[in-house]
Each structure stands twice: as structure tokens, then as C-alpha cells.
Image 1: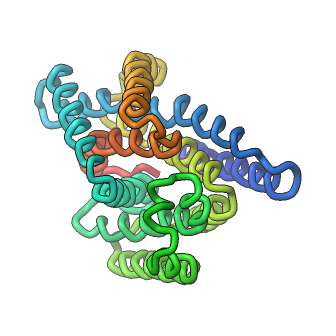
Image 2 (image 1 turned 120 degrees about the vertical axis):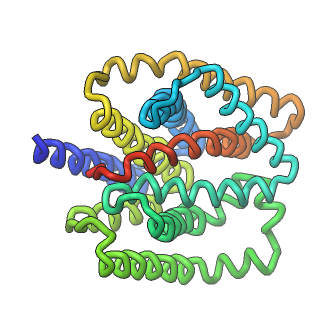
Length: 318
């Protein structure tokens, strides 16, 4: 049974990476995907997979509360969740503060999710999460610097013509290499200390291929692949493993059905927030509006998932 679970987990990554490589070959050597089609693909997968994976938060929090023998209150969950959401939304009155915080949250969250397969959460795991998340985010951003400046006016207006932008353009590859070496050094150091679960060759191949895919795909497809597919699907798998280890009576169909209502509410909230942004800021760029929406949803989602990984520290996710 454990062998079959391990094969299934490995297969998930390989299927996702195969899809990424197919998209890369198709766009680079067959038919370049037009920008409007890329945006359509991004929105489709964010709405179908990216947002629904966050709608499972109330189930995760219910399990979190159960493990510490505390009664779960849906009213308390919703009130705390919305308070965190609203609090972070206020930071967007200072866009670069909000954007910086979003990057920091994303770095930690990506690392915590992707690295759960090789290291249990503990006091020293934060450095691994930060090293990995920084590498992923640097590849996503620095490999598509000109696209970001052109696609998101607030970023382009701030960066274009500045010494900082020139520095990033000139040394983007060097920055990525330095962060990659830092990540490898952290892995080696933690492995020597015996804090990292044995790393398999398949995982090294997966991480390497992942970096190639998100660096060579155009910005919108790279973001679609990493966030809406890779990150979201692996997060759902980790959540299901969490439930399976602590409450085997919860079946996958029940697990998913309970999230449908919250998925619909989340999607409705996103649409409502977009139209609100469009009303107050008529010339709001669609990609920038999506960035704001996702960043606002990140903080409460990260808090719930962090508790889950902390509770799961005595088990392996792979």
C-alpha cells in the first residue's frame, strides 16, 4: 500500500511536468500561444483549480481544531478569515508595501508546500522553505522581467528607466544562480545534520525540470503552470494526506463535496472584488487586479495551511 502511494505521488509530479514540457514545446517550436489566449488559460485554471484549493481551508481548519481537542466554529473561522483578508487588503493603499509582503508570504508558502516531501516542519525548516521559495519566485519573476514591466503598468512605471531595473536586467541570471547555490547549500547542510528525509533522484529531476519549465514558458503560462497546476494540485494532495492520516473515515468525495459551496463563495467574492476595483480604478489592468485578488486571499490561506503542516510534523507527506 505504501509503495502504491509513493508511486502515485511520483506519478502526479511527472504528469504535471509532462504537461509543462508539452506546453513549452508547443509554444516555442510549433504555434506561439497569443497573449489573449494565455490570459484565458490563466483565468480558467485559476478559477477551476487555484481558487478551489483555497476553498478547502475551512475543512483544514476544522481538522486543525479537532487535533487540539477544540470545538470548531464555522462562524469564528469565517470572521477570522475575513478579518485577515480585509486587513491585508488595506495594505494595497500602499502598493509596494503590499506587493513586498505578498512576495514574502509566497516565498514561505511555496517552500512549505513543495518541501514538505523532503523535510518535516521544525525549527530549522524555515531556512529551507525560504531558500526554495526564493529560488522559485526569482525564476518566475526575473526570467520574465520585461513581460512583467509591460503587462503590469504600476510595476513598469516604477521600474522602467531606474538603476534598479537596469541592475535586475543585467544580473538576473546571476541572481538566480546565487539563489540556486544557496538552496543547494541549505539542502546539503540540513542533510548532513540528519534533518532532511532521504532525497531521491526522481525529486532532483522533478525540481530541475520544474525550474526549466517555469523559466522558459512565457509569463502567463509559467504562472498558470506553477500556481494553478503544480502548487494547487500538490497542496490538495497534501491536504488529503493530512486527513487520511488523522481521520480515515473522511472519504475523498465527501472531502471535495464539502468544499463546493466555499469554492462558489470564493469565486463570487473574486468577481465582486474585481468589479469593485474596476469601479474605483476604471483603468485597472486585469493582470494587476488578479495579483491584488490573489494576494488578499494568500494571508488567511497561508495561516490555515501553516497550522496544518505544523500538525503534520510527526508524519511524512511522501
